[in-house]
Image 1: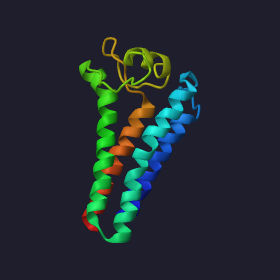
Image 2: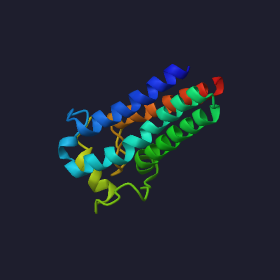
Image 3: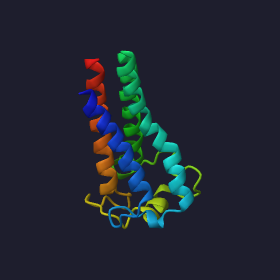
Image 4: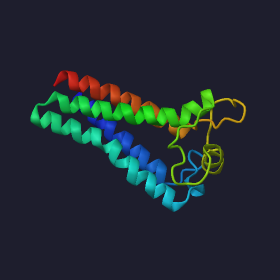
Length: 156
C-alpha cells in the first residue's frame, strides 16, 4: 500500500504541474493564463502537493506512522481546498476568498478567461462557473492519493 500511495501522490503532483504549465488545449487552456499566474500557481501549490510524498518516505524510513498520517492529512486538506474552490461556486454559488488572490478579478471573470473554453462535462447551473474535466481528474487523483496515504499510514 505504501508504494501505491507514494506513486499516486507523486503522479498527482506531476499531473498538476504538467496541466498548469503545458498547453494541452482543449483539455486545459493555459495559453489564456498569464505566465505569472502559471508560475505562481506551481510555486505555491506544487510544494504543497509534494509534501505528502516527502512525509510518506520519511515515515517509512523512520518507522513513524504519524508522519504518514500527516502526509495523508496534507493531501486531504489540499483536495478539500480544491473542491471548495471549484465545487462551491458551481453547486452553491459561493466563491471562496482565495479564489482570485492577487488577480484583481472575480472568480467568474477568471474562470471565463482561463477555463470556460476547456472540456467541461457538467451541465450549466445558471451563470455559475463549472469545474472542467482537467480539475475533475485532479480532484479524483487527490482524493484517491489521500485515501491510499491514509491506508499506508495504517500499515506502518
